[in-house]
Image 1 (cartoon, rainbow, N blue to C red):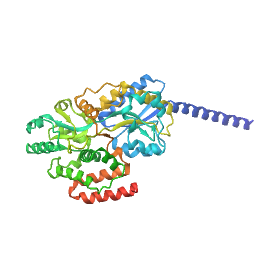
Image 2 (image 1 turned 45 degrees about the vertical axis):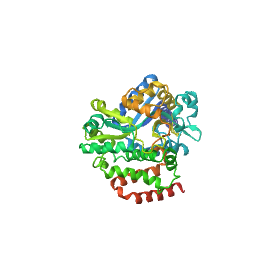
Image 3 (image 1 turned 30 degrees about the horizontal axis):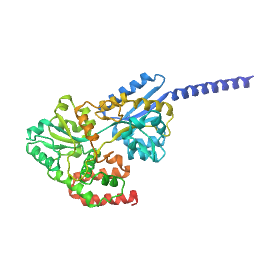
Image 4 (image 1 turned 90 degrees about the vertical axis):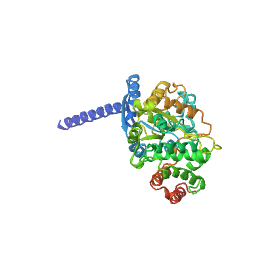
Length: 416
């Protein structure tokens, strides 16, 4: 009798444990986990879209984790390889392809077909693809160019936006003579220097050469690469950049423009979303000037995306979230809140003055649209390249030794 009672107790406990496990499994199945990279002023825009999704899908419990941009870049590889959330924000181009190539991303080609994305996202399909399959949902994308203070230009006697490199250099000279730092750059965040390298290379050597360099097919000791650094060195030698640029990151650089201490900054259109209204009214935006008129004008237009990890637990609800975020309305709202351009061609065109200039810049570009230095290149090479840019910015006399080190790194990574 004692044995039967004990067996009954064990059976009850086992049944309770099974029931608890079943409840936990059901709860887990209804919880969609999402990690997104967000700077402070971007979080509210993300949250608004997620709140709309919750309202439209009350059967799904959505758990969102916000992570700072630099920490996110470090952690994403570990998430994808081990126990990832169901949806992650990320970037198109090589950054997306890197993980797709390793089998860490869910193939979304069927979703592109089902949701009509082959049409509504036609312009960014190539950067969303790897080996003929699509692995991401495009969100907003940035146009890059120069933010500039119109009032400071007027103070220095500059009547218009520079379209050529000689004009740009002359405007820098006038600004410096007027007691204003011509160019702000948040060099502590090395990717801001990569924007300078991209544009100087695109304007001097063109899109085809730039992509060959990104693919590891060009030596860093090639004279064409050195010409890029020499043009950059001219700006540094003339002290056209702000002092102590390596101490500023993107979050701390804004006050220099707001307070009128610097006149220009090369940056993506997203930056406008964080500017105070009064400063935004004084701010203009122009395309990176032409250096060689024989080189077709190309631009950077990096696309931000959502991806589903191959090891995601709730892929069905992840696809529901992507379908929702990919609608013209939500895509447009996200882009507007971030100061970006919508990837969906059915979304309303941006009305913000800076975003409109960026939209016109990219839509009129015939020389090619790159994804951005660290999104077009293998991560290890990009990391070494951006570290070298900071070293160069600190001591531009070291061009030759820096390029020789980069060439040794290229040979090691690409084995070419």
